[in-house]
Amino acid sequence: MSGMSKNLGHWQWEEAASGAVAGFTTVASLHPLDVVRTRFQVNDGRVTHIPLYKNTVNALFTIGRTEGLKGLYAGFHPAVLGSTVSWGLYFFFYNRAKQRYSKGGSEKLTAGYHLVSAAEAGGLVKVCLCTNPIWLVKTRLQLQTPLHQTRPYSGFYDALRTILREEGVSALYKGMGPGLLLVSHGAIQFTVYEELRKLLLGFKGKEGKTNIPDDKLLVIRARIQQRPGNDGIPKYMSSWHVVKDTVRFEGFPGFYKGITSNLLKNVPAASITFVVYENVLNIFKRARRKD
Image (spheres, rainbow, N blue to C red):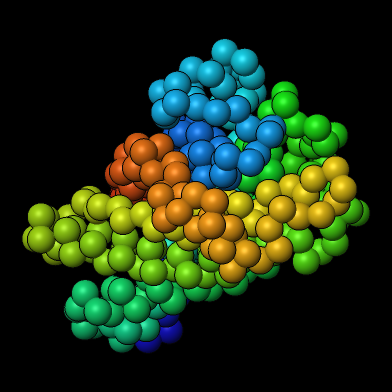
């Protein structure tokens, strides 16, 4: 039994490493679409420092022309850090939960248990104190444009220091509420992945998954994570404030801003994440067989 426990622990860490590599690869390949999505989500018609874009393609060309690659990859470092840490932790907690519910792998799991395992993993990652500040800084950096009146952050560490000095520790956890609600998004994602994996490859396969984005929560989180104005007063004080003002000034369509760029990013991102994860994990398996 001790040998089995040691082996399970060994593979949980290798699965975490595979997830981290997958997270890094996904961000590196699709980050410009994430920048566009974030800018669409916060543009409520009253924002003065974010240019108006006609559509996703126009946004990509406009940002590239006026801000260059630096603009298209704004917030890249925290995005890479956050995605690598989050996916690594997610796969680690997810596989630990699956091992527990399957009694060490002796029982096959149903879709319900996959859903519970993914929700549990997502909850643990979301409440991790190190991830929300990373996502907040990423959002702030993505929203910096040449039109911004406030002194721009020079990078990830400057943003952290400035936020702590000007807004306090609590500011680093803005948007955590909507983030926790987005756990359902990941739970559905992993459940579909597992079921397609079994269906298409006879319970031994390596790919398949779809993605079901929750754009309402993404809009709320992006807007509450915006940087305060020159007067130091946040534009939105809470998630409920975001909801009320969005309905008041934009109606329900306001919650779906950035949906095109979100879909263009998330559908291939889903495939990239799981394909890279499975292939890196297979490399680990082949290396262990040689040992």
